[in-house]
Length: 185
Image (cartoon, rainbow, N blue to C red):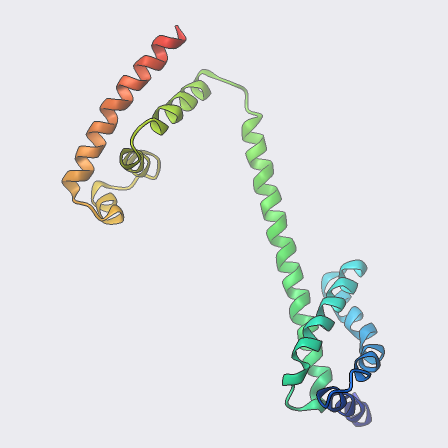
């Protein structure tokens, strides 16, 4: 970039910092196309690049008062465009991962209904009928595979209390599952 261009940007930024809002449209005319090009270079989507450039202007206008060297506007603004473009790519990747996870979950729901599926549902229903303390212990022990000592540390209780809750939870589950089995026959 030519030093004369940097000087023009510096004057426009100084004008804005002095209270002249007329400087913003001039900066936009000088830089908007470059912002779009930079964003497009990174995200490879014209519409998204325009959105990113627009969003960058909001940030730039909000922070322009804090720019210490007005002549450095170009580099400063382009870093903002670069950062927001990279953020857009990261957000796309996160969305893609969420969609993939959702597809996997839907795939599990599409699994054929089997006797094992029925048993899992009954067990889940039975666990939810237990007191909350027992639900925690059962879940941590059997589903998350924590040791008794680890459960005691996580819940901030004694190992004896963990053992007691686990014993009582198993006994209640036996009773609940017998009732469910009896009701289904």
